Length: 525
Ligand code: XMP
Image 1 (cartoon, rainbow, N blue to C red):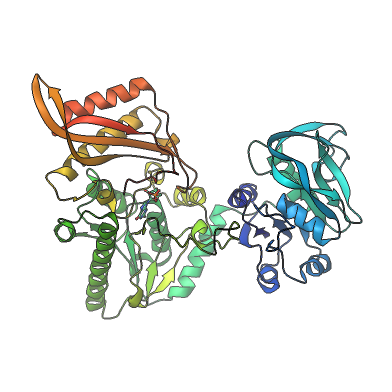
Image 2: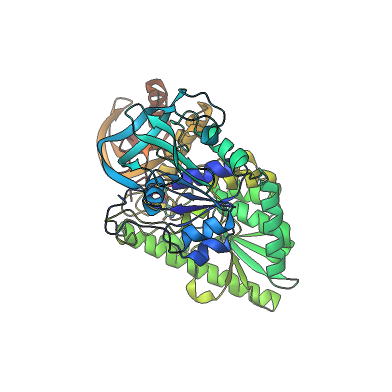
């Protein structure tokens, strides 16, 4: 295992993923974890991540007491990246200064020493890397050597081979560091002697075994399917492990996309043979939402209603089976469980609720179910890979994310007003189909339409109209936390807008949302 101690860098997840891409298992723990937390993973290599702090700050985060003794005694390799390297230098008795010239962005570094970190690269050979730092190491601790410097003369890479300490001032994990992957590969395999033996097939087998052992021969398991990738892959995995003792429910809350219910149910049943009960609760949901315009209230109502239905489903199962299901499957992913060092000034947690997210798998707290979270160590792209092994159709695995509260957060205001939902479904379907036909669906993180509760004046077929306006939104993103708008070809947009206005009754104006996140969020509510 490679253990990553996180000091709040925006690239911590990326380094974890890069190492996994090289088929080596890696995990993130907080940079201030206790020694017991670190040692329990028995790591061969520990990476100290970058971070926004200065090692001179009073509250600069650091590894625990006894860390340096532990790694030395156990022959553990340590690689410090950016802040991590400065921390290592400072803790080992070197000097880190506040850099006079801060270095951000692409830089050239020059290799000063053959062998070691960069393999047998020529002395004087240069490469482009991605730097992002203010402070710099000016005096190295005893036993360290400079391996590379930037053109400005800053120390860019250091090593103490005897003690197994290494440091990079730049970020090898970002693609702008041209030879970053090559450097990581050399470091993991040739220097640390790790083996590229982490495979998705092994993850699958391991998780199936854990589930079998946990659930035993008699217990039953329930799972809420949202139609999204995570819950579907999690359910399919559990189904493979325990068969029809898994009971899934898919709730039609009346807020689904065009033909969504039929489409996902057919995948569940025909392609995946999952035991799914489909509950049509659209009237119940829409009844509760009638007249409600506040976005947070809408979300809360939907969350509560879902729990109510889920409870009923569990009760029905108990009546039928004569015993209560003991377990609940959740499609929780790794980024949701990583405990990181928060950036300075951010407070310990994200205390300000921007939106109360509701996942269809949202937990009824008083149900006392034990959790099965087979994806909780995986990133989204790894879940897709796992889904591939489990024969989840590729088109399904590549679906854009869809929010738990569904179209309720895309019809602004009262969702039950007029035929807003129906109009939105049609507009959304035309937009998404056009994106698929254009071959750009996979380049977009998420695309959708939004119904605006305003009417505008138009002229259609020589007639004055007073109809609705809709908005199209498409974004690119890594994880939905930040996003940029997607640049469409003008011709494409022109065709889509014509098609919408010509075929959807009640729409005479189409807008395009070109706001990034921040300042906007992805969804409009
Ligand atoms: P926002 O609008 O917060 O969205 O910028 C970020 C990502 O999260 C999705 N989203 C949700 N997903 N339940 C979910 O499961 C929710 O309540 C919810 N709200 C937003 C959104 O579609 C985007 O991918």
